[in-house]
Image 1 (cartoon, rainbow, N blue to C red):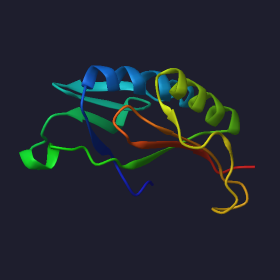
Image 2: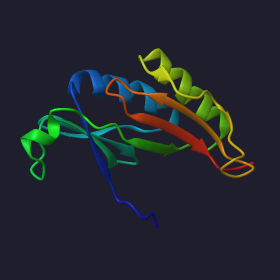
Image 3: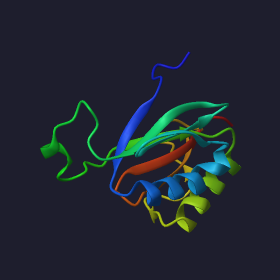
Image 4: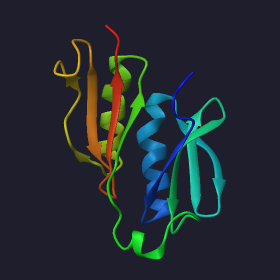
Length: 131
C-alpha cells in the first residue's frame, strides 16, 4: 500500500500543462484519467493519483495564488529505459533540464533518476530503484 493516495499541484494554464504532462508521463504508462472543470487527473489503471489544476482550490485563499510555489514530484518508473524516455519526452514537451538520466548514488546505489522543470517551475522526476 502507498502512503499517499493522490496529490494536486497548481498550474497557470491547464491546457498547456495538460498537454505537457500527457506527453511527459506517457513513457511511464501514466495517462490522463479524469477531468473536472479546470483540473486534470493522471494515473495508471484508471486511478488518478496526480492532479493539476488551474485557479483556486476550495481550501486555498486568493492571495496564495499570486505566485505558484514550485514543488517536487517524483514518478515511479519500472526500468531505466522508462526514466530515459520520460526525460526525452518531457524535454520535447518544453521542460527545462534539471538533471539528466543517471545514477544518483548519494541516495542509494541503484537510484536511477532524471529531473526536469515543468512550465510552471515544478521539479518533476522519474526514478527507478532497481538494478
